[in-house]
Length: 541
Image 1: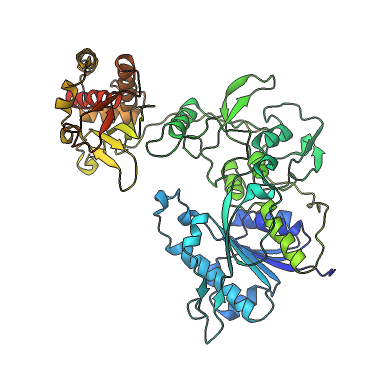
Image 2: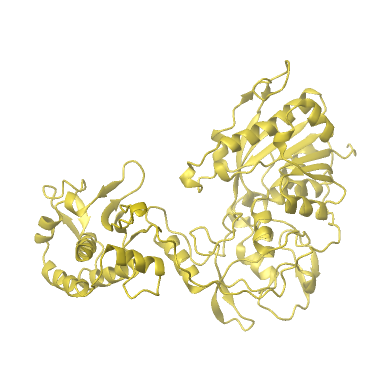
C-alpha cells in the first residue's frame, strides 16, 4: 500500500463541503478559490493549512495566469454556481450563458493541468439538469487555450443521491469528470439517516439549559452540548408565512403535493441556499417548547441544515448573519458524498483509506447564533402592481381548477382587470378556458339544484360595493383594506361550493355542450366555482 498524500485543489469552494470530504480521507488540501469572502473565510477557518484565495475564476484565462496562481495537484474538484441550471429557477428557463461560461473556465484549468501530466483525477459537481449542458468532448481551442493541445474528454457522467452515501438528505447531484465511481454506503432506503435522527441528536433548539453531550449522527463524535454552535436559538416564523407555505405545498396549481410540516421519518429534502419561510420550497418543522408543547412552526437552525448536509457538528461557518450562513451551507457539496469519491480514488491508487474520523481544528465562528431572539416578521403592503393568480383553495379535481387572476391588467396605465380562468393540467397540453369561451351559461342550466347555489352566490357577492381597482387595493393592503381581499373571495367561493356540491366525484357529462372546454367530464364543483368566480367579477364592473 502507498502512503503518499494526494494533493487537491478546490474551485468554487464555498463553505468547503467538497474539500471536507477529501480532508476526512487525509488528502492534502493545497489550494481553494471562490469569489465570495464569507466562503473564503469559512474555508480558511476549517482548513487553515490550505491556501484559499478570493478571486473570479474568469480571470484565469491564460496558461501563464493558471500556473502563476494554481499549483500542480493530483486532484481537482469544483462545483460551479448552479442557480441558472436549476429547474426551480424560472421553471428551468433561466439564462444559462454565465453558468456555461464558468464551467468552461473551470474546464480550461483542468485541460491545461492535465496536459502537463500532473493531474490524475478531476470532478465537477452540479444540479442534475447540468448534464444537458456539459459536452462529452471539449477542444483545446474551444476552451480558449493558445496553440494546439489535446481535447478534454469528459469520461464519466453520473447523477448520485447523497442519501445513498449516508448523508441525511435526499440530494441528487450531477457529477462528471475522470474518477472511479464510489460504491454506495447505504444498500437500501432502510439504511438512510432520517431527519428525525438529526433532530433528536441535536436536541430542541428552544432548550435553555445545554447540559450533557451532543453526538453527531453522521460521524459519531461527541462534544459538550454547550459547545454546539449555531443551534440553540429561535427560528419560529409568523403565521402568515407558514400558512402561505402550507397552501403552496398542499394545493399548488400544477405541481404535486408536499408534506407540511416536513416528513421527519426520511432524509431531509434538498437544502437550498435561500432561507425562506413562505414558499413551496421552505423547510418547515414543528416548534415545541422545553415542555414539548406545540408553539407554532419554525425553520431549521443552521446547525440542523449543516447536519442534513453531513457537515460534522464541529465544522464552523464564518459569516455575519443567519442568511449568509444558510447560503454557505445550501450551496455546498455534501461531505459524505465527497468522502465517498475520495475513498474511491484512494482505493484506485492503492492507498488504504483511514477508518477513523480525523478531527477538525478547534475553532469558533466570529458570529454564533446561539441565544438569538427572532423578531416575528410582520405583514407589509405589496407593491401596487403585484400580480395575483390563485385557484379556489383545495379545490383541484382531476387537474381542473378555477383561478382568479389580475394578469390581464395594464399596470403601467393603472388599468386593473380581474379575470376568471379555468385550467386543467400544466405544460403545453394544458387547458385554459374563460367562462365566455366554454358556454358556461348554458352548462349551468343543465345542472340539477343549481338554482339554490346561484341564489346564495348572488346574495353574498351583490353586497360588495367595489370595482376592479378596489380589489387590487385590498390585495396590496392585505388585511388593512375596507374591501374584501381576493384570497377571501376564493375562500368564500369554496365555502359556498362545499355547502351545495360537497362531492368531488360528481361530474357534468355532455360532450356536445362541453366541446369548448375540450374535456368530456368536468366536476360539478369546478363548474359551480367557475360560476361564482365569474359572477363576483361581474359585480366589480
